[in-house]
Length: 155
Image (cartoon, rainbow, N blue to C red; front, side, top):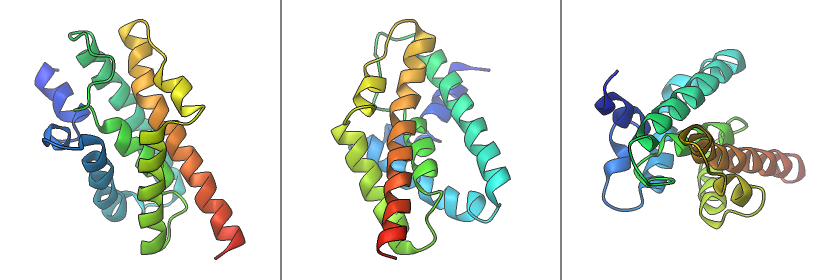
């Protein structure tokens, strides 16, 4: 596979190359794909797609990080896509999708512990590529748990 292929995947089909707020654009770009392809599938295919894109994201990030000195380039947004897909697992209404997006972005920007811990992992390109993915995976799970909690308490 070519470096352009890895960049295409890591930028989620070029979304990460948008000039401002690539993480926000990457998170937004995850929603239509989730709505049209993942959400209707059921939990097993959803989980399989999530795992596959996580490993594809790690591999694409790894290939990019091997060739650059950047720790977590802003144009890599496949991590936001995976994090959003995790955050959207319990979403069933437009209100819950919006809440998932807002909470996920807040956690991804704010980076409270353990998100900050994952974000600071670095070393080999392989470990750093996992750090690129892991902070957003954790942010997605925290968002998922908060939405589930809110569904039990409020909805």
